[in-house]
Amino acid sequence: MYREFFGLEDTPFTLTPDPRFIVFTPSYNEVLASLYYGLENAKGLIVLTGEVGTGKTTALRWILRRLDSSVLAAYVFNPRLSIDEFYHHVTQMLGIKDWSNKAELLNEMGRVLEERHRRGLRTVLIIDEAHELSDYVLEEIRLLLNFESDNAKHLQIVLTGQPELREKLNQANLRQLKQRVALRCKMHSLPNVEEVERYITERLLIAGSDQPNIFTPGAIDFLFQCSEGIPRQINNLCDNSMLAAYAAGETIIGRQIVEEVADNLDLLPRRDVLKQTEKQMDTVAPQGRVLTAEAREELWNNQARVEQAKPKMFQAEAPKTNGNGNGTQNGHTNAKHSRFDDLDDDISLEIEEVGGFY
Image (cartoon, rainbow, N blue to C red):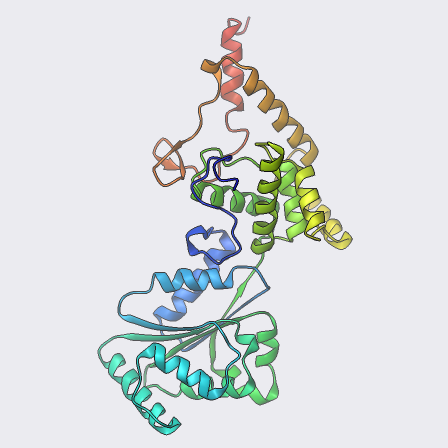
């Protein structure tokens, strides 16, 4: 609805785990690198945990789309299965059909996995929402890890789920499975305002925006407080804020719009979150942002008014795009474009108009 209004080719803040819109923040890079390392080195059992909405499924789908053709992957997204349903689901994905009981199934699966390993091919089983798996299915997963030779695992398994998965694996009856975990990864929320700003800006660029700085600094600060750095919450707040701005005819989204949206979505920050955020801002102020959110928003608004009042020949040129929606400068990607990058250029132009310094 608002795409044309903001000059977008796609919707940037959907709630679906679309790997096209993945933003490679430092914490996200660490998780993807760990998953790649575990799969590349055939570690066997990998466990990925993270809070709701931090992007675990997006990371899995990004990995799945980039697996080599020599890798056969089975992806289970519905964990509430009985043992029979679980095996039926997995064998369908692996192309195993000729079996009538569990013994035949395991024999055929072992033969297929051994043959694939002999030919240098990989087989991966990825189970999403694994914290919902029953203890009985988890025990079957442990037994599947016995498909191995003297020096290699024939089947690699990735379990991903909410933090409850760690608690589940700490149960006494699952201690054998816990000992099989070769690699643990944890998906974190975005830790600070700077990464939230980068996340929002890059998703707008991917969606085709040539002016991705539509959220003011004050709006981004408040988005961080409301979302607690959780990407799904950021997407929800940004999408509804852009819709509200479109309805109001506003091309720049300030804190007030975000506050109204957060109140409507029941996402206003808790007092303890506000105190923690203020504490973090006080801690990083000497090394990070110099101005308060209010001062930066005032400066941004004043600069916008100056740009509108200038003759057209003196207005700052919009960042060029490289054909895929990413801003470029001198041939290099300019994914994190600052709102104040052009301030010095604008000031020098105004000085030249009055004849320079005397």
